[in-house]
Image 1: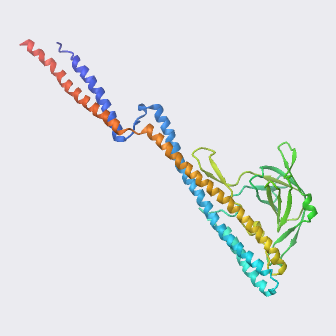
Image 2: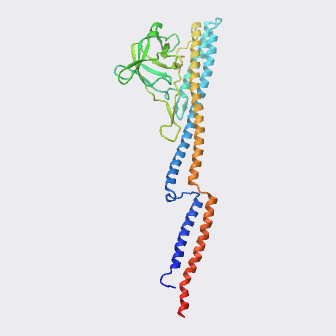
Image 3: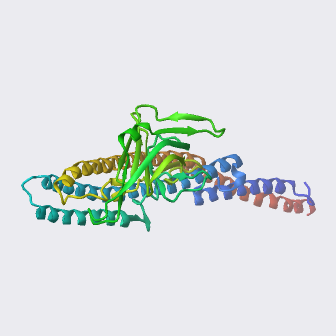
Length: 391
């Protein structure tokens, strides 16, 4: 028996400290609900869980962004729905004005209503906004530019729109020979209409120019050139289509640059590049071909029937595109919800403690700690037994 060094007490103390440490860690896990309360608990698991948590948080924001995109589409579609109703009314008026039983005064009365309806279309297109941004003025459509020989943008011409399958790049439209007729006085508006002979229309060709200056004929599948008011439209049987608005007469070759940019880009994922571009074409009397709509004469009324029909088809096309966007976005939201659910479950498996299992560990450590405390007390009593030998 020794007095200076109580080895038994030291052994009991070490065991007590170890059990107390494990008891504290178990208590921390139970109180926080986390299996990994500190980095030392599971370094690799902590790193993985932090990445997962970042992804989960990002997906939540992407979900909000996708729902915002759905709201934008719904706002645009709501206005287009009313514009479509206006066009249906215009169609009725055009058919009515084409009736030979009407007098000139009758058609003037019809034209007054048509003028008001046209103004309402323009007003709705200009005032339809989301978060202070106009969404029907072409701000969120893919951009294209008409340039002169020096490469500068020509202010007298602009690309109104082009189809999704029209590839980005530089083009030359050759064989153009167009003039304008001033319609001021006929319709009461200061607007010119593009005129082009059928022979010239057949000679118009479009070429794509690559980076090395090589050219290739584009839109070779039964390309059709058409004019409507001040817009030249080139289209083919594959669905490729480009519209160029002209504000000045022109003869020769137009240089056009198509940029695959300008659409409203929505972040629908948590990572870079996980985006969806929403194209909302410009809606105006010009793009609908209704700027010079005139039903004051029987001839004008008959021509208006076809013009309004074309405008209705244009609105139908835009609404179909928006409907497709909305369906896609709704699937995107559903996918994001499922992904967040699954990733949260994985995150929980790594980070969250099993309370029942941990409570078992806590109870065990608590018993061991109590036993260690008791043994420590017993070990501290052993040196006092030496006194019996000194009596």
